[in-house]
Image (cartoon, rainbow over all chains, first blue to last red; front, side, top):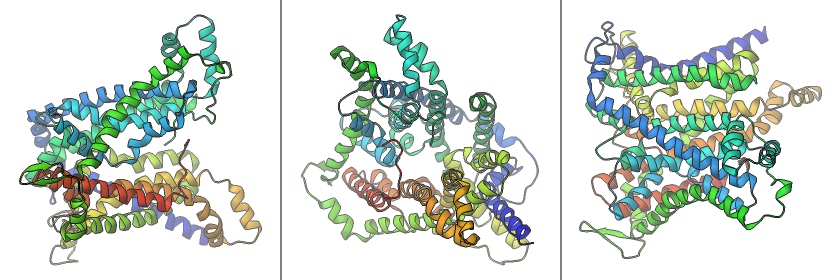
Length: 262
Length: 300
């Protein structure tokens, strides 16, 4: 009796919290189909007009492409630098390696706002024009610690003998790294890459402060918000949500689902 | 955050006991790009900003006279100091509420949900956060605003005659924050809970503890590191966030990041913005010092 009661209470509580977690996104998606000008009740009927409006909006589409570019390029750089640094610090004995690790991780502990502001003051002082490149630089700064930490923590000693064997067989350092080490660490490199893409894709404050004319999607959505409650914002938000979930599902089923079992 | 295959040891390989200069130079070559990037685009800008916080802005010009005017102004001007107070109050409320709401959920997922469904339960908890971060706060506006879902529902049901004021104030900011951090804390606390050996509970039961005593004296202390790590993360992310209070908070009670952005926008007062950022960082450092004894920094 007491057991069923606690069981019931548990599931009621979980249901309540899940309801709270899902409430805004459910409302967001529902009213992106609103047939009318306001994304609030009553729901007038089903319409795709706001999705059409999103696809017809050149600035939104350009911002989408910009976001994609910045996310991919900055994540590739962050992963590459993170991998090289992890390789050096895990395989060689360098003086002050603890300090170096600390330095590489340090940006993780600082608010994005402060990182952005620091970069902005320097860029302003040296008269460097703001662009998608400066946004990308900022995104590498925030993603490098992440990529380094993930890849570094997966560089186990059990890989060393395989690398040594490759070297004994005459492979150059470059070959060892690209043909032996990187493939062995592929799951964590990919995890770092996708996490980094996600963070860059969704990042607002750095992109907002360090961009000028070409902006990324979150910044463009931000300027949409000035028009108040608008079903078009619902539509672009829902679109991002549905695409992300679809990508996540594919990754889960293929890449990470597989590596988990093996 | 754990990578798929964490390893415990990082000793250098045995064969490289005699590190030749060429080897070492090679290693420096590998680590240099990342170090230089971090120094050029993180350390230098930060030091630059710290220096700038000691300058001032007079009649549209940034004057490189070294003084503490910005910091003195911060403590003297109520409009600035109140920002820190608001930030701290909101962050503390959010952190405590999120822990209190997330702990039971993490416990239910770890203890009551069948093992094979736990992963699904966690994925479901994270799922709504795959929408854009800016849009997430906006979607709370749809729920909380005067003609939003909650008010319209309550009025249709006849529970209230006037719409409740739940948007554009501190309540809305707190709700928006708690929404995100409940998810985050559920993950960190869950990760902590499933690592506990069931033997602890068995031992406690053998020694005659009831369910509550077991929880209070055994499980809770053992999960404290997970709670504190999550709470610290919540604190850092919450106190530095601009978007959520800007969208949901209205303009009455500005938090520190909003005031920093105001300095940048309307007044172009970079030195003041820099000083306020340093103060924000100090707040985080103090928080870190306060919970450092519980924080387990991985692989430090």
